[in-house]
Length: 117
Image 1: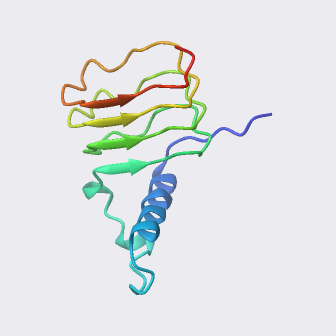
Image 2 (image 1 turned 90 degrees about the vertical axis):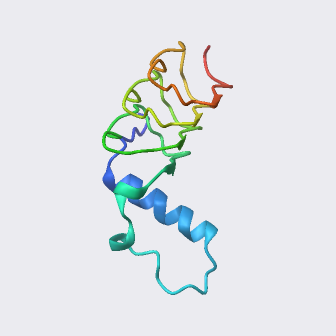
Image 3 (image 1 turned 180 degrees about the vertical axis):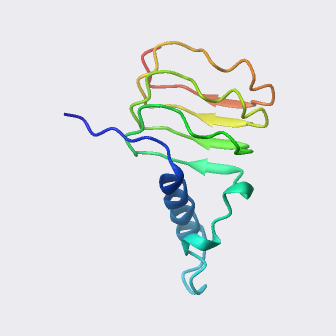
């Protein structure tokens, strides 16, 4: 039985903290606490290798970059409100049809390689 993950607030906070840890100098004292994550100001989100099966719960975000590669996503959906999205990486998933991108009028970079298309 394959583990399946949904996108939720905890997963997003964990991803933001991981990105901070990766990008920040380790000598900076505890900027990496959950209380410092302002979800309203997130414009870039990377959720790779999380076993996410569905794109959901991203309402209210004003993302410019979304990386969801190396998951188990089968359908492009749940992105209609992300009109400012410029970069979308859905490579290494299980997507079989290109759809759900019509509202992404600012999209400049789309990666769908290694899917079932």
